[in-house]
Image (cartoon, rainbow over all chains, first blue to last red):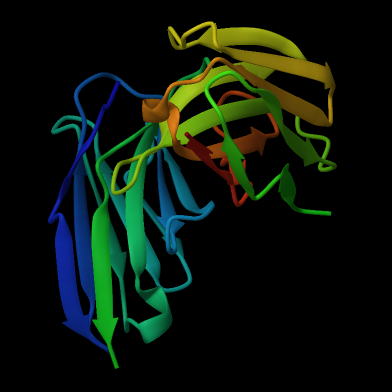
Length: 110
Length: 113
């Protein structure tokens, strides 16, 4: 089962620009998480935002959560070629179910 | 040790074979997970183990059989698979089931012939 829809499906930017990805979901959540995946291998956890939080920062990452609109956004500032990857949002429950959205493919051109 | 280790990295098996995927973590995490990922698709949850007990089975066919021998190990036993079961199988762990990020292994790429 899938919970989230991500927008855009693909994004191509120049190095140094900011990248914004959006995620919408359907049901109530405990938390929302963002992951990065390179070349179809393991996923790397980027950030977790709880349902009672509105904004969170980690280095060049900024995540917002609007539970009234059931949406979240991930902003990567000053992007680098190494940020090229697929990015997934995932909704978390208190049972351990973590359900992933469709993902956004980000290409950062040097 | 901050890793989840999965073996083997690649596996080719026939439809009549029996094989097992292994997953190991030494971070003291009490929840472990199996996900299946097809090409260009998001990971799909298969099983959740919490404190070594199976807590969620996402209606996975019985040809996939999970096992958690201890708090550090998670196995996925495979039997009589179909070609459509070919995928990347990902193991993950977390400190608990609620409000924790997951640490993923690099996966086993399974091909069923």
